[in-house]
Image (cartoon, rainbow, N blue to C red; front, side):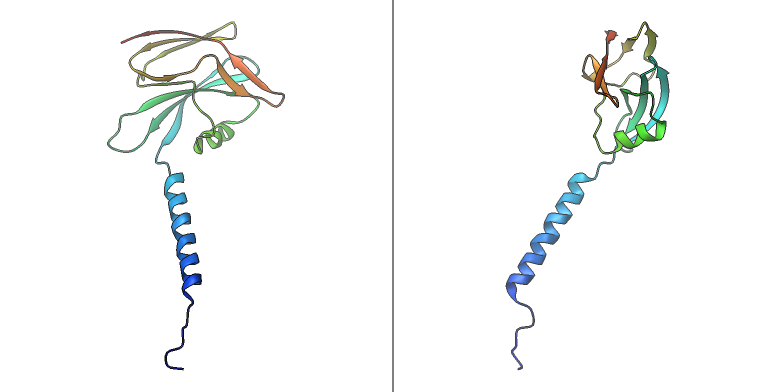
Length: 141
């Protein structure tokens, strides 16, 4: 009984692989991006424009992200929707002082800085379907 095998190698190998897969998934899922709402603008009775300030850590510059979101939902619902990268912004820029104006259900933007990402028209999901808001943008360096 002195040389009896306590653990079988196959059980140990399966447990080790499961541990590695779980650890890798947790590392990939982790995102240091933090966003806070800096401005909320009512577009119409169905949609709001949210502008967030995003920071990925002490060594990166702030970026400003623009989202269109369902007006019937709360700010907490919006914060929850952008946590896991489920909702993509229609605009990402480094311009903190971008001019935003809403006229006749259209969003007018004046950007003086870099634009990292832009998608037009901005779309959002409502209870009844997917809707879009037209964007008119003026940009200069």
